[in-house]
Length: 481
Image (tube, rainbow, N blue to C red; front, side, top):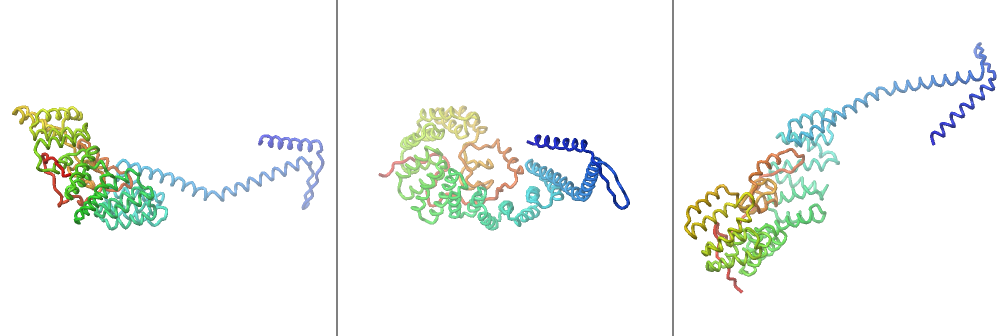
């Protein structure tokens, strides 16, 4: 369309020029004693030239007027680009775990850009990683003064409060942050952690209910967390002496977190204390299908402590039938068979456990059981010593391992003993070889990560319930009808 308009304009100019050439005419101008005689074409050309010169002068004057402003804008643009480059360099340094470099970059970005939200954030994270708590707090507090960055500042201050163990301040800040963004997942985690550190399990239950309503947590994760909270509430009820309420809460905890054997152990102990031995047996058998654990086998036999050794072996066989392929089933049967002097049965199941062992080889417990078998069955002391020697360098037995820091503990608890993570323990072989890698990765400078606080021990075995022996299998069950 534009080329048509241009063509028409050119045609009009050519037609006008041709018309003036065909009709030159005569123009006479008299002004202030001056007289000018010329043709129409020359007059038109002179007028066009004057207009062009005037236009150029106007444009030049406008350019001169705009020059200071343009210079200031270009200078500001250069500063902005340099500030963005410094800010990017600071973020990269934080991600690389180099807080000193990040702090220098943050200072340069501050000089170029001023106290913008991103500059304050990088400065705060760099100061925190450098250990300059006061500078980090000042930067995070500055973010609170701006409505659009208030939530960001609250997150940083909550992290600092958790690091310092200032639970009251962290809780106050978390409530303020909840009013701004109740659906933030990290905020739910922080509130759960605070409730767990203070053993306020009712508050933890309410936090989970709020999180489920606003869909701040995945359904499966919220379900598992709820099981942990219910287990701790059950322990509180047991300490108050309300065993019936404790048993109901423990039953719900076992349903919500079926992979945690501690929930089933606690539930079964409560049922035994209430005299409901058959229900306790069913509880343990149900848990064995999903989370076979030595404590379950010991407690299963603790239901009837007066049973004979052969009855114990038969009881363990019934329990292992709930999950016959599990390595723990073979170990439990072998241990009971050793006590009952059923050497063939013990050897068969230990062989199955060895065949199912991971590439790292049999565990220490398995090696010790083989040593007991060789010594007890035939008195083959060289073979027994060989297995004991293998046990020294064997892989660790399964324990409760923290998914967050890799720390392990033989006893389950809601909070990791080492890093303070909530609901992070799983029953598996300790990853001792990987912990050297996990530590530096955990200290790498990922911005705005919640800390790993020191933890007060809130877990413990209920004192009024029967305690399993430290080693060996307890007697097997003959339950009341």
